[in-house]
Length: 318
Ligand code: 3HC
Image (tube, rainbow, N blue to C red; front, side):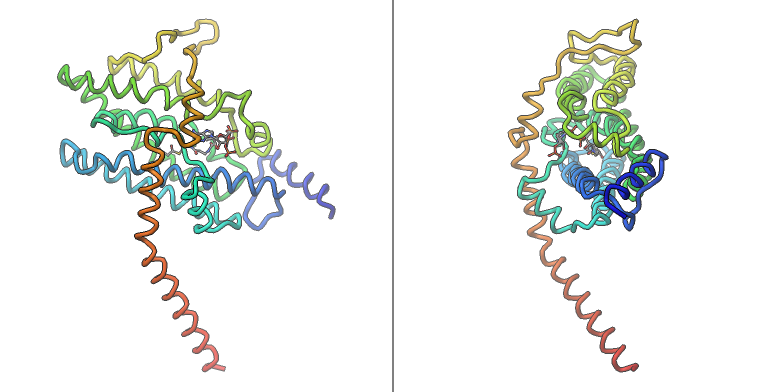
C-alpha cells in the first residue's frame, strides 16, 4: 500500500472517531507531534510539583499538609503515566529527561511563577488545576489511545486537586481580613498566568489546526480559555474576591465574559526561560536527576544480572 493510501486510511479512521494504538500505522508527523505534546505534558506534571512542595513543610494544619502531600503524589503519578504514554511512541525516558534538562523541551509556563504565601497553594489548586481540567477533559477523547486512557484517571484526580484548592481559598476569603487580603493577593498574581497557560491565541497557535485535524486537540486554545474564564468568574464572585481585570465584563450578546488584553510578551518571555523561577525549576530537576543516578544504575545492573541468570537457566534446561 502506498503511504498516500495508508495516510488516507489513517485519516478516515480518525474522522470516524477511531483510536490509534501504538502498533498501528501512523504518519511520522502524527507520532512526532504526540511525542512533543505528551512529553511536555509529562514535564509539566514533573516540574509542577515544585511550586507546591515549597509549602509542604509550612502547611497551616496537618489536614492541609496531608491533602497537599496527596496532591503532589498524584502529580508525580500523572507524570509517570504520561512519560509511559510517550514511550509507546518510541521515545525513551532518558531522551525526554535530556530534552527537559537541556531546555530543549518545554513545560507549562505556569510553573515558573513563585508560590509566595499559603494562599498561593489555594490559588494554584483552584486556578491552575482548574485550567488543567478544562484543558485535559477533551484529551480523554484524543485519537491516540494510550494518551486518551491516561487522561481519564488524571482528570478524576485533578478534580480533587481543584476542590482542595478552592476550599483553601474559601477558608481564607471568609476568614480574617488579613487572610482575605492574602487570598486576593494570590488571585491577583495567578489569574493572568492561569488564563495564558491555555497557549497562544488561535491565530498564533502553530500546532492547533493540524492537531485538531488529527483529533489530538478537540478545541482551540481560545475556546478552552473562554470556557475556563466563564466557569471561574462566578466562583471568584462566590469567594467575594475581585478578578484583577478592569476591562472584565459579561457580554449579554455572546453570553461570555469579555476580558482585557493578555500580556503575551510576558507569556513568551516565561516560555523562553526568562520567568522568575525557570532557572530554579530546572536546577531542582537536574539535582534530582543527578542524585537519582545510583537508582538508575542499580536498576539497570539488576535487570542485566536477572537477564543473564534467565539465559543461563535456559541453556542449562536445553
Ligand atoms: N507553556 C509552555 N509552552 C506553551 C504553552 C504553555 N502554557 N502553551 C503553548 N506552548 C507552546 C507549545 O508547546 C508550542 O511550542 P512547541 O512547538 O515547542 O511545543 C508553542 O507554544 C505553540 O503553541 P500551540 O498552541 O501551537 O501548541 P499546542 O497545540 O501544543 O497547544 C497546549 C499547547 C494547549 C499546552 C497543548 O500542548 C496541550 O494541550 N498540552 C497537553 C496539556 C498540558 O500540557 N497542560 C498544561 C500543563 S499540565 C498541568 O497543568 C498539570 C496539573 O496537574 C497542574
